[in-house]
Image (cartoon, rainbow, N blue to C red):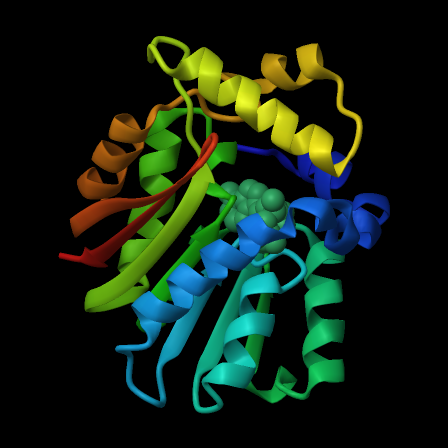
Length: 230
Ligand SMILES: C[S@@+](CC[C@H](N)C(=O)[O-])C[C@H]1O[C@@H](n2cnc3c(N)ncnc32)[C@H](O)[C@@H]1O
């Protein structure tokens, strides 16, 4: 798990201020993820309550809130600087009254039942498989039975024969957004970012109590899953 000092380094005030624009050249990736979420979640009732874990600066809520004006959102994130920006966006864009902001990890968030949960580019920060399962169990505990999950993460395992091709493509993708230190980036897999391949991530999600799990999205090293709470 990213401990508070790593959260501060990776998502503290200086990084948070850059976050929204940093990956703009590859913003189409997030657009596609948001489109998938929007289509999957469109089956929810008009008054649905959505849990957004690792909400960051509020990217997912900024897409969903205007489209579904009856939905309410719980935004959970341990980085106060990221969530402060999410709150500012929500106020400026007129949906703050439908949002609850919880600074902290999910286990400290209220155990309210939601109709659906979203986790975009978060659970890969849990490099330990048991901790990653705990994370999804905490999500499941906050969903109604049958509640929807959309999860997207970096997912690449060095033992996978496609690893080198996928990682190379991912590094090129990041370079499309700006220069990176390739060796340092590769070095974080297995330490700061999980080295769990897609089948392992899917097993972890299922072991946490989800069913109908489908690996429905791949963009280089990013994978996305839909599922329901069993
Ligand atoms: C890469 S950002 C993604 C933010 C947002 N979902 C998006 O797609 O723009 C990852 C976010 O997850 C948060 N995070 C990291 N570890 C977390 C954990 N264990 N539980 C909840 N949030 C976490 C970070 O603070 C950060 O805001």
